[in-house]
Image 1 (cartoon, rainbow, N blue to C red):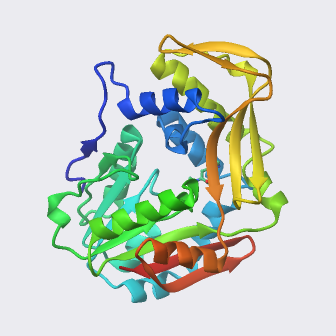
Image 2 (cartoon, rainbow, N blue to C red):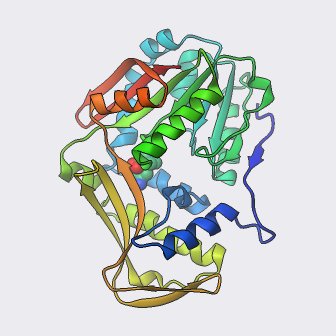
Amino acid sequence: GVVRQLRQISEDDTGVDVAFRADVHAGLSQTPKAIPARWFYDTTGSALFEDITALPEYYPTRSETDLLTRHAADIAATIGPGRAVVELGSGSSTKTPLLLAAIDPAAYVPVDISGDFLRDSAEALAARFPRLPVYPVEADFTQKVALPREICALPKLGFFPGSTIGNMVARTAVDLLRNWRAALGDGSLMLIGIDRIKDIAVLERAYDDPAGVTAAFNLNLIERINRELGGDMALDNFTHRAVWNDTHARIEMHLVAMCDMDFTVDGQAYHMAKGETIHSENSHKYGPRDANLLLRAGGWTPIATWDDADPAFALILAEA
Ligand code: AVJ
């Protein structure tokens, strides 16, 4: 069952995450404007992301679920039983049961920035695995996370699915991998989902679906700023854009200003010119050698890869 939910977020006396406030002001003050993708995931944003994963155009979740299903026995044989599984950015934990049922772990530690969402998914997971101790941690996994002391003596498996590593530029991704290598310790393993470079039309459609769910997910960031930081940004003045940046091998999402505008956040004034954007997400894609190099740079040695050719996606197991 769920043991207890640890909270490692600092909020001010109005209940707003202090890092969110700081990142929004810093991001709106710089040129070009950019806000880190982690701030998509309030309760509404986490639910919208779940809707994205069900879209026909959004292949990563389906590809990764297929890989976990088809190769469960092989993955389990390579990992072995008795580990504490630490999932980075667990969200709804929908893929997790496939892994947990196969490997017979000793504990499960979902780490997510969206506390209410985490509570619900940890409960659901615990109901499905009644003998498994579950220790949810509400935290930003890109920062230092204190793991529950109960799992300290257990061998660890980091589980970082969904190609979430793609949200980070290379130097941040390497820092994160190194930090988690140190946190999980000698003898630990990391199972990571990596989205591959592929046909640009397939990539762009996955991030700009005709039903407009990804647009709503992107625009929810504006609504969250208005809601939590007392912003007065006019939602109707922004539009969603998803574009492949070939130099950086990434999909970029932007919130595009459709007219000149002035607005305030926390009473602080900002201006945007027509056509100017707020860069709201990067989703880097990696070829097979690129992914292995990234892992090695982060202190992890790849030992097995399970992948799919079309649409290309990979699960890589690496050891500390
Ligand atoms: C959760 C980071 C894996 O980059 O594909 C989906 C987020 N953004 N559609 C991704 C996302 C727009 C997603 N990750």
